[in-house]
Image 1 (cartoon, helix red, strand yellow):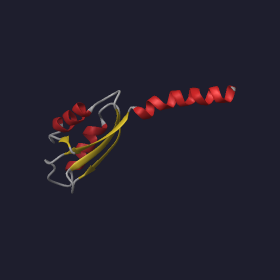
Image 2 (tube, rainbow, N blue to C red):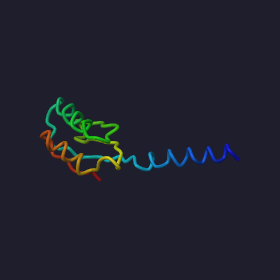
Image 3 (spheres, rainbow, N blue to C red):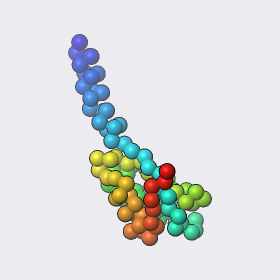
Image 4 (cartoon, rainbow, N blue to C red):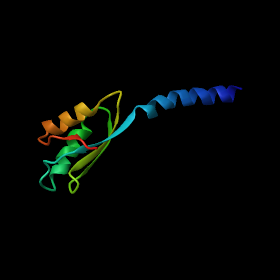
Amino acid sequence: MKKLFASLALVALITPVWAATQTVKLSVPGMTCAACPITVKKALSKVEGVSKADVDFDKREAVVTFDDTKTGVQKLTKATEDAGYPSSVKQ
């Protein structure tokens, strides 16, 4: 019985962390050279809550994984815009 309770308690602690993780794909059409993705990735990585940012120059997009309890899409697009690369959510 103690093991069952311990297992349930562990699941209850871990589950909210999983539930808060989101991934969004951003269109970043203003990237014009191979160095641009580096700047975009650095800008996104500095946003609190971002755990991963992959930027693809050929597709002109960024795929960002973040904790939605700490940040949101609006802060991500603001970060790219502040770095000189306006972005929007890609469907």
